[in-house]
Length: 251
Image (cartoon, rainbow, N blue to C red; front, top):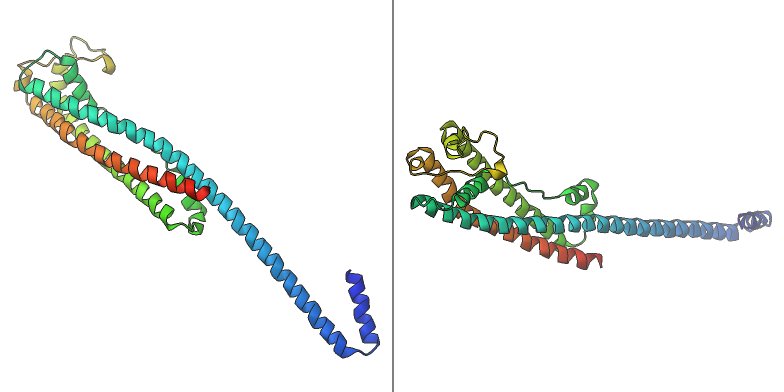
């Protein structure tokens, strides 16, 4: 094809048909430009297609993370609700000096001082941010829901961490004051495992300064853990809304 066009140009020049040659040359240039523009358009369309495919993959990873997070949040919501009730019951037992259910008192105190691990996974979101594909997301609703969801996760982590730091400080005070040693009777049972430990709350321990610390822990456990469920409910709500939006976008 190229050889044919070259011979055609040479023929026009040899016959001194310069005007026709000029028209032909301009036409050839136009054809070349059109070809380049078509190639660029095809390349651009392929690039957009690849970007959308990559973005879809990132959103699917986020959806997998969110589904896992929601399970953790629902478990913690149930756990914190149970702990709130347990702390209220233990407080009542201690206040009435009713030592008939030492296991309930022990479980309530341990529930507040033993750290609850939170395994929220934001790897998909971090990958999306680092990839630069977030700017290609042409859906403002999903973008807003993504940030709303992870802001709610940050709130949960902040509140849980604050509670744990506070409880750890009081736990340390209980150890320093000797309350834990007396309550758990560590001298009699020095090698007992935590899951098998059973405190022995007595009238004498209610006179110990550690008793006020325990009541403070249980009181906050009753009030604050109930409030925590509200943060988890918000996380679950935003998470489900985000999952629906991602599903609609990808389909």
